[in-house]
Structures are given as C-alpha cells and as structure tokens.
Length: 217
Image (cartoon, rainbow, N blue to C red; front, side, top):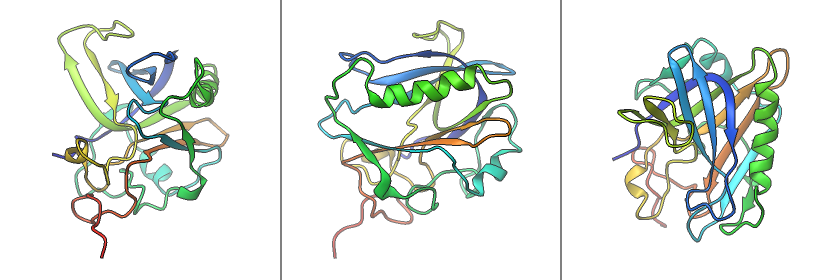
C-alpha cells in the first residue's frame, strides 16, 4: 500500500543530530504549529547497503511554491488527485537529478556532511523571524505517548521525506506516484532552500499509475 501523504507547515524550534552509530540515521527536527509540535525524521544516510543521494537547491523556484503558500500552518493532506501540492520527482520537474550527490551507506563522521548542510539551514531558520518549513512526507500519530526524541505529547510527526517510488523489495509496498517527500525552507524576502532525497537503489523509470519500476523492454 502506498504511503499516506501530507504537507506540514510550521517553524523549526529544535534540532538533534544523528550519531555515527545510530541505527536510525536521521536528523530530527521539532516543528511548531498552532496546534502543537511535530517531529520530522530526515534521512542523512542509508541504513541499508545502498547510498543515499541528495540535492540541495539554494534558490528553489517552482510553481509549487505559489500553491503551498495558501496552506494553513499545521498538517494538510492534499487529495489524491491534487498535482499542485504534492511532489513527484519523476513527473514534477522539480530539479535536475544529475546534480544529486551520494552519502555513502556507511558515511564516516559524526555528524556527516549532509547532516551539516541540513543543520546549517535549519539553524538559520530558527533565528530568522518568519522563516517556515514545508515538509512533504508520511504522517504518523497522534500517539498516546511522548515523542521519543523531544518528549512532547502526543507523539506525532512526518517521515519518508524522500522519493517514494521505484523502490526494490521490501520497500515496494510504499510505491506510488505524486507521493514523494522533500523539505522546503522559506525565508522572508530571500531564496527558498529545498532538499530532495533518493536512495540509489530506487529507479527513475516508474509506472505512471503504480510508481513501480518499469520493466525493461
């Protein structure tokens, strides 16, 4: 079953780095909304044998920015047929895939380069009045327990902030079109920074209905 999908709008208030030996290699972000906090789990390396690819657009320009500008603070779950407020790396003309760089599955460093790059932008956002994040991914919660990293209640957040199509097993169950994740940071009067993430094992040749890898002719 494809991942559930949502867009979270809010303000970053706290960040936790991943550690070199972390079995769940993510940067954790606490995002504040009018209805309380959420957590974003952002991949910074792969926990598998494949590499994580990333692209950072420091001056991102795309019609989707106009579409999401009207979203309320908090979580929005666009309808399945909404192509204006969802991401699709294959069909959405969001960025040049050839510009992506790799973070090795066993990347050395604590934190690693991608963690450093994300953290620099997020720290800038924390100290810039009016800066906001827009996170695209799969929501979870609310849970009847505290968040395991930031300890707010109820626990809730977004993960899968990466490409969600063209996946090998056992992740193929999450494939779909217009379900890709990503992270935008908008600064008042300045450029929007966008982060895109793909696992090297994922295919860019995907079916227009299922998002599964196309079979070779």
